[in-house]
Amino acid sequence: MEISECEIGTEFTCGDKRWRCTDIGTRVIVAICISDRDDDLSWYDGPPYAVVEYTFDETDLPVCEIVHA
Image (cartoon, rainbow, N blue to C red; front, side, top):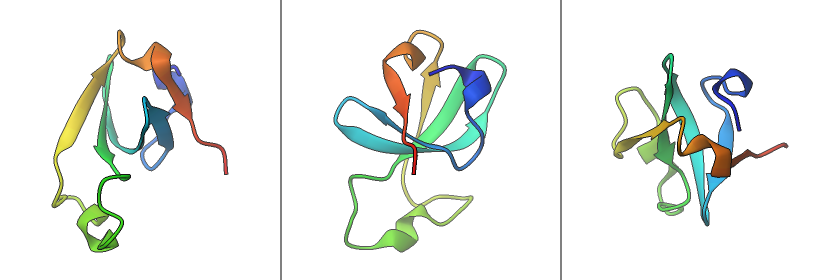
C-alpha cells in the first residue's frame, strides 16, 4: 500500500488486524484498529477516538493491503 492510495476512512489490513485511516501525513498514515472491539462500534466514532491511534510509516506500508468493498 502507498500513502497516495489512502484517504481518511480507508480501511486496510496489516497482519491479522483491520485498520481505518484517521489521518494522513507526508510520510505516515495514522489509523485505529477496528478489529479489536466488535461489541461497541461507538468506540470508532471520532475524532477524538476512544481507542488508540497508531502511526504507520513508509517502512510499515508495504505489508498493508487496502480492503476493497
